[in-house]
Structures are given as structure tokens and as C-alpha cells.
Length: 283
Image 1 (cartoon, rainbow, N blue to C red):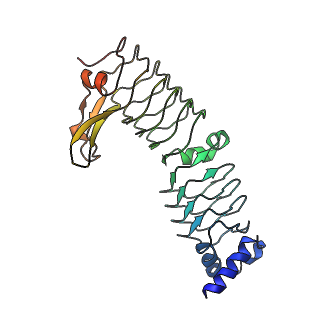
Image 2: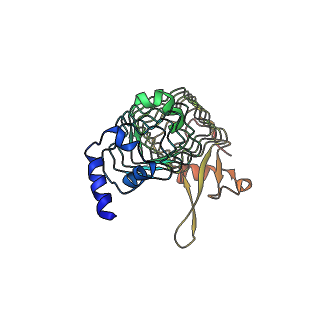
């Protein structure tokens, strides 16, 4: 059986014609599940591929339209031009992939997760951007133009936003924990309720931005259970005219919102490395 699978996988890697993938869903599932770095047939429409792992595969221009990909895992795959139109992508995970010209038209994307993916401006400007930016961990958004985009409630944890344009962007209640936002333009953006703990903001532009009750500082515990305060790094940020009187310190546990308090002036200076000249600060 194992020898048969190897031979079938080898045939698939040599760009077997689309008809070979349409005869038996069970055989196709076995081939994909035992294949790493393969070139798959271009026509995989309507197939039951739920829960499968696509590792390092060449999926350029593959058509997954109407396919059942619920819980599927795409890791390190090449997805340039791939189509997921009308596919079931509930709880699917995309890790370390590049998204260029990918279509998710009318796909069911409930619970979809993106980790460490990279995208271009075209993907952000289209329907893919709205799906990707809903929850994207460690994603590369470096230098992209996101100005005016509604990112209310988005989770962009640990993302690379270096030199990105988020001017005038709605970031209310967004989770921006640990992002690299060096030289990022947040001018005129709405950051009320956003969590920016651990964000690196050196050189970021915040003119006319509204922080309101943003979570600027939080709690970090080491391996010995010792707690310390960690904040967004505001070193080198011009805070003239910025109202910091309501920014919050919150515990690391999401289940304890009542424990939040106002960040102190000392924490802003010592932990957030803020230059408070010209800013409105807590007493």
C-alpha cells in the first residue's frame, strides 16, 4: 500500500491532468495527505478535502471552488492565483503562505486563521483584505496603504506594520499587541479601546489620533510568576496634543476587564518611554 501511495504521489507531482483528481475523492485525499511540496492538479473544484494538510505544495492557479476545505491546513504553500470561490473554509488555517491574486469570493470563512502570511497591496485592496485583516497573527503588512480602512475589532497581533499607512483608520477595539509599527502613520486614526501593549511605535505618527481608553500597558509575568508592567514603546513618538488621560493598564487575562485602571504618568515615562511634552496626561 505504501509503495502504491509513493507511486501515485510521484505521478501527482508531475502535474497529472485534472481528470486524475476527479475520479475518487478518497484516492485524492490520500495523495494530498501524503504529499509534501507537490504540484497539484489545477482543477480541484467541489472535492471533499476537509481536514487535509497542504504542506509546501505548489497551488498556483489551483481552483478549489465549492470544495469542502473545512479545518484544512495550508502551510508554506504557494497560493498565487488560487481560487477558493464558494468553498467551505470554516476553521481553515493558513501559515507562512504568500497571498497574491487569491480569491475568496462567497467562501464560508468563519473561524479562518492566518499566521505569518505575506500579502501585497492588491490583496489588501480587494475582498481578500477584509477577510485577512479580521484575524492575522504575525502577518507582513509592511509598507501597505491601509488608510481609511475599517479595522474595528480586528486582531492583528504581532504583525509587521513598519512604514504602513493607517492614517484615518478605524482601529477601535482592535488588538494590536506586539506589532512592529515603527514609522507607521496613525495620524487621525481612531484607537479608542485598542490594545497596543508591547507595540513598537518608534517614529510612528500620531498627530490628531484619538487614543481615548486604549490599553497602553499591561501585565507580563516571567517563568517564576513575577509580574511587571509592559507598555507600548513610545520612544521617539511626538505626542504633542495627544490626550493620554484615559489610556489604560489592564491585566493579561481577558476575563478580568474590571481590573483595568488608568495608566500613571510614571508608567508612561518609565515603562512606555514617552516624551510627554505637549501631551495631556494623567495627574
